[in-house]
Length: 341
Image (tube, rainbow, N blue to C red):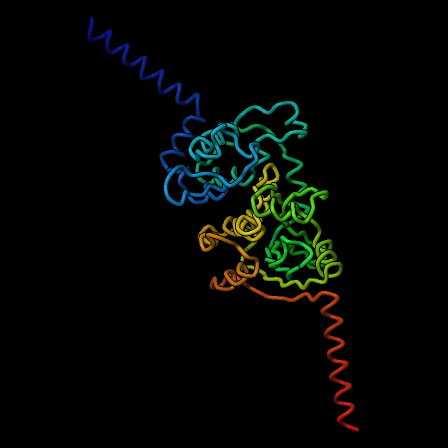
């Protein structure tokens, strides 16, 4: 009887193990993710903005807002953040998440979900029934189909723009709409208007300001740079298709929950925008080229060096440049007139 009893006990234990596995698909997804080493995958590390230490130590995310991470240790632990992210997608929504006064992780991190779903093939029947109306309305309004890198010439009245400024433009691809009605993505220091120029410079050099992403209608930036500040704009349309453009835009939505310590010389507008371009094409390793400083004009040179990355170039002169060009042609015409007398 003892061997039979032992067999029954082993059968019951093994059966309960199988049943528990069947009743806990989240754990199964987590185990598959670890078996595929998704926590080490470059795209996962790009989504969380992890950077490896120069010499030794743990990886650390450059994102500095705690709300960006779902795990308490997410800033320094890609594996813990991966497991918590998978678990959070299946969590039952709170009343405020149903009303979307607060975002459920399923709606807050659309690009994380899309990528993990492509790797793990989530069962839709197990996911919460959420419409994510706020995100859907936002992404439909932007309708991303293309990406342009914009370079604005230097501006002496702003220490952060002494070497120029970079931003992205999200093209909607609507032929009936002027492209100035598209949206521009900006990354800048969220500084206090009461800070003096000296304080602003010191804090900017030392990382004393939070840097945040923001989105504006492109015509707003044209008016600010071209007209008010007399800065020329160079536009570089990148060779990104609609799917890549949407990935970048979805990740910008995710970054609305965080900030990055802003440094004038390295972790500035150029550096952070390059991180978005790497989301569009993970094979690009643009930020690895900059160790000590990242200058907007150097960013443009780097983009132009990448074979096949720039599809089209265009120039948008400022009001001042347009006037100077007209004066130049008038003077030239006058000289020709004098010579003909």
